[in-house]
Length: 80
Image (tube, rainbow, N blue to C red):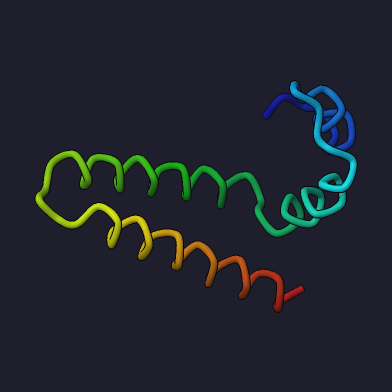
């Protein structure tokens, strides 16, 4: 956490965010608190390890993982 507010952090991003994407990104920010983002990054690291160490089909594992993220995002959006 940098301590910047959402607007300031988004304005500081390079390359800058395309103006049509600003509001959708703010909505996503509200859906994903910092702990949830950290949890998902940890899960992605676990997925990467699994992809590199098993013979499992990589496309299937990635699709499953991102499908689970999409379901979680949908639930978060409905709960608001």
